[in-house]
Length: 297
Image (cartoon, rainbow, N blue to C red; front, side, top):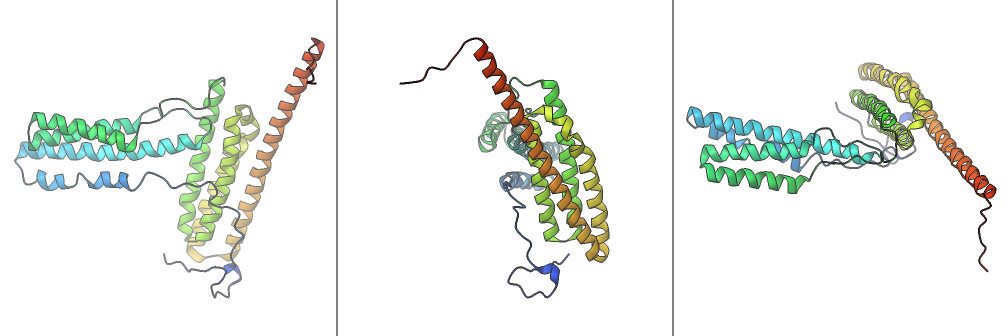
């Protein structure tokens, strides 16, 4: 869908064309690594199609099997990079259940091994497979193999938080997918801004799983409602560009963002209050035991 470009210095008489205040809609955003080199992995084995259909049936089957293995390796690698980025974005995270990048390296090595068997011999196949797997690991690295930030924390609580955050992230992803149908870049940026605020709340809950009870409605009920509202708005606005619907939706995002930010601030204040209480209790205990700091003279 064609989109009209506009900005602060663009001639556009419509009132809504005024540039919105930049409040950091992409604050903290980072470019994903699941592109570029990973996309080349999907393209690299395609010449095997020509080799397959110009060969004898048995060799053709080998080339097609190699093609499938190498496409599988590319897909596993991309999923592994996305899982690692999600792991790195969180302060408390479990290691991926399946080390996808390592599995991708194994699949790549197997694909090159089968290619070597089809076109050369067993020795060449072993060399190709080994080099392919090693170079794949060198290029894309290993998966996270250890849990992060869970030392001394109740695993039951962290698992509950992880499930709640995963569900909340699915709601945010659905919002992003829905708002693209509206064809409005400013609304897409506005949704990204709300997602940043929501994820700040997620990180706060991950740091202290005890906050999950106070934030559960925000991670489930409110985000579910925001997702449904975004889907309905995108359908309506995509059909008739209803200005009132846009204004109502923007006001809804403002209210949601304000409430999420207020809840995050309250959780942080509660954590600070708990720390102050612990400090006071410790000081009282030290005083009862007659421990006094010595002043340096």
